[in-house]
Length: 459
Image (cartoon, rainbow, N blue to C red; front, side, top):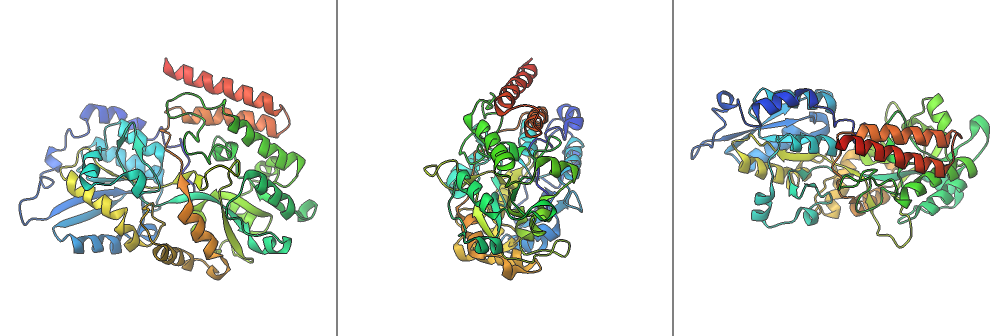
């Protein structure tokens, strides 16, 4: 599964924005909604569920059957938007469906950008009244807080925190324990100790898959991403976060590891050789990789990339030992109710079940629900790993511990010019890492360029 990059889908849907503005969230739906009105007593309600998720990745048949067994008066019609699970294709089809007035009840988004964008377009209904009536707090019941502009428009589905994948065989050879709670300084120390050999035979302590081509900017703000609030280049209030000392620390970390310690794969090699984090790790060219837990499905190796050593998982590193543990960036699914739905209450009940008990029935992804018991989490990871070639080579205790204790940073609503910001920071980072300017000049140039982009977009 590929990482859904923040900001890349902000522009998606803009081509149909005029259509949406013209017809409104609910306009033009009358002829399609004749069967969508409130169901008479004893009649069934049909929920039209628009999703990018495939049967293979989400187990829809089994999951929907379980819901309908418990709710015999509800029929859930799953409308797949992409046979490949392509989120960009799915977004385009979803926007066109909304613009043409198709009846829709439940919407599923893959990342904060597409979620926030459709909220701003009026496609998504607020859930606060239903949540208050049910008597729970999203921030307590779930690991991901989906609040936008003071309201809830989605409940979080799967939980994919970032973590560190380690070559446990290499750890054992170096006499290093699996980290249970560590800092970036300790990460750097491990990387030095795990770096072996010279030339073409060299094994680096770690490999950073970015930034590159305006994407994977996660790797230019590593020290920001373990913060509870404002882990992005733009703060939640829309102002620049480039003056945070943690941005400079992120650059210092990358420079020290590549230039001084020589424990990280050179950035120039990554670009020129078109390296990939999967093959670098599984081919034992890097002993640790910082990445997202969408990799759970590959930890035990695949037909394409076999596993010939033991693997362990460590949490995303902290900046200091005193910092709270577990905070990291997280990808999730945003389960929402369509603003145009005639069955909002039934749609809400469905997504509440789907993100709680339904996630256990589904058994394909780690849920964001906080009430998942340890044994249930273990069953899900067993199921996920059973789809790999060598699940026995994965240290499941370390994997389950990291997944159980990870916490999501607060959502920073993406701005429409996110891609411009990423491109600017990427360009300044490359000047630094390729030896064309120092860290201080990179920080100053990044600050100036991002401020300029923000100011230009305020006009």
